[in-house]
Length: 235
Image (spheres, rainbow, N blue to C red):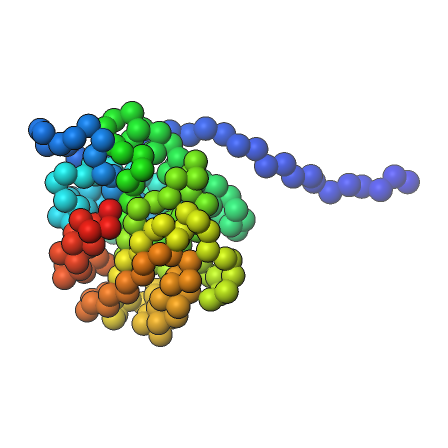
């Protein structure tokens, strides 16, 4: 009697649309403008992120918000009888799938930026919540080897497997400045967890700041002028 074989698995890659929105550059801005690429949190979208970024990103920057390629519904909206569509960067049990989706999204956005007035040598990432750890990981090995000028991480985490020693810094990451913003009442990244973030970042990035503000898991209003100043200086 022949042995019955179980199912076999294959993983393929497909192309899906990537939506982005951007703020028009004002007249007189040089053709190659510095860039801020914004990434929203889980169950959010680019449309809700762009107005907040608009308050923290200087006018002379090309401001772009990209939308996560995976869709979901806003938690709680189903029970309210009005389910609302939202987006995210991947929740696959295979972490490499989520990282690949994030990397491909940023890579595609960078190609669009090069063709639409952005300086590919002056790109900074601003992320809220879910994409923060993805952005940190990506900065060690950025697309095309071009370092990001700055990373702003708001109410997010550091890759879980990062220690103070491993993985090692890269030439690209040493050229990148970091501003990590935490809030005191964040249930996902409480201060006792966030306390270890600076020591896990400082050995990998050329400049690291950690700011703490009052509030829950949201972008604190008090952080907006700090982020703006950081981007003016480091972006």
